[in-house]
Length: 144
Image (cartoon, rainbow, N blue to C red; front, side, top):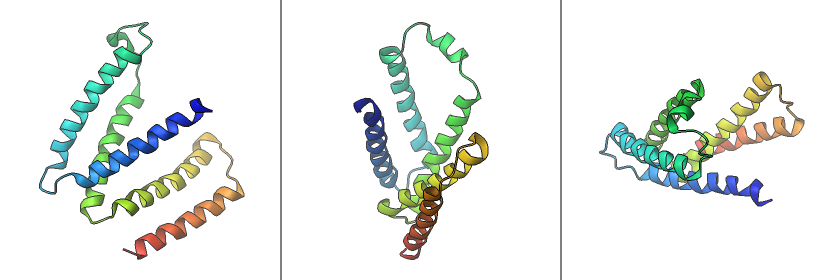
């Protein structure tokens, strides 16, 4: 059970830190300068993680050769997410609702993507959940 739950706890804790940090970016700082520091930090941590926790069957050079387009897609999506959240909070969204609205939209989009591209079944509960989530988002936006 621990192996099943610890990654979810890590994602939740990391997302809390991520949103608090995004909300706390100084208003007079350039978001892309912030991202330079962000990704330098991430690069150093990733390199350490490779050597400390990787399988060590191959060197970094060979491991990098085995990557594909997904690594670049992750990089593009990460920059878009980081800048998007900085601007979400600069636009006035509350930390308590900005991420909730974004992640609710994400969940709905992923149900559709799962159905369209991965042949995942959409249950009646998922359809009802998406409808309720949409109503919830509308209520949050109206409360703004």
